[in-house]
Image (cartoon, rainbow, N blue to C red; front, side):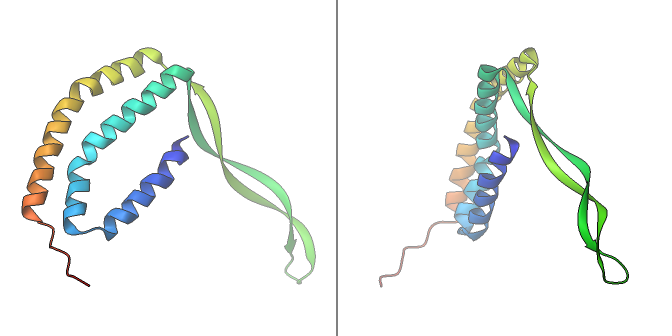
Length: 132
């Protein structure tokens, strides 16, 4: 499930790099608050399911076709590393404690984000679009 968040996050980072200075500033300013909200959503899903996903990388040996020093085709052992995602039971008490901690932190994170976003808008006012 971790990879499910990586792709959209990568997309957001690419878009943030292409945004205006104001958009980049707003994205940076609201990042901690957005992250906390997203983490609470993930925790709620994990608690409802009773498990989470953990991705580990496993290396396996496999017998594959290869060329020998003489240029002939043969078979050789090759190591192949693959991600393996497994279900892992959650520690409900730890998740509930983390959720409570986030619930207490989110209001101040939101206040800070709103303050910082206002500063971004003052620092980087949007220019009026030129008529085409």
